[in-house]
Length: 86
Image 1 (cartoon, rainbow, N blue to C red):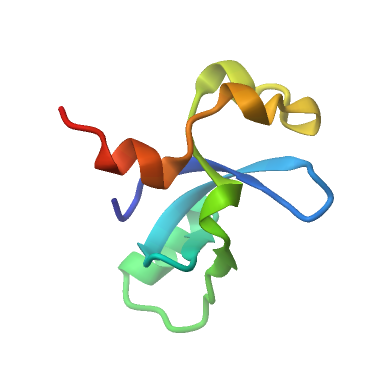
Image 2 (cartoon, rainbow, N blue to C red):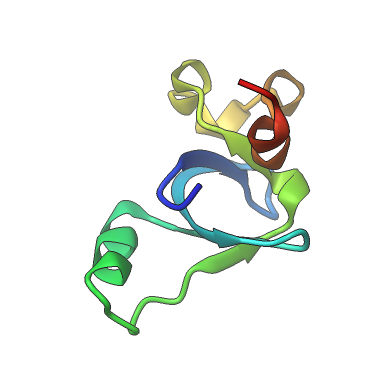
């Protein structure tokens, strides 16, 4: 969970890659790679951004190269992927 790479949908509809810091049923806190490393080191200067669960998707390298034109229907919601049995 913490540290998972994800693709997030911003308010403009554009995608971005991030790392999960924390999550509950209402929001998923995401930061970039540098912010994640600083948070893991104990820094309080980084504030992760909260996203709605319906805007956070499992990382898929096929879609990571075209973040400006992501077909969101082809991605799996991150919180749904967590609930799938292994």
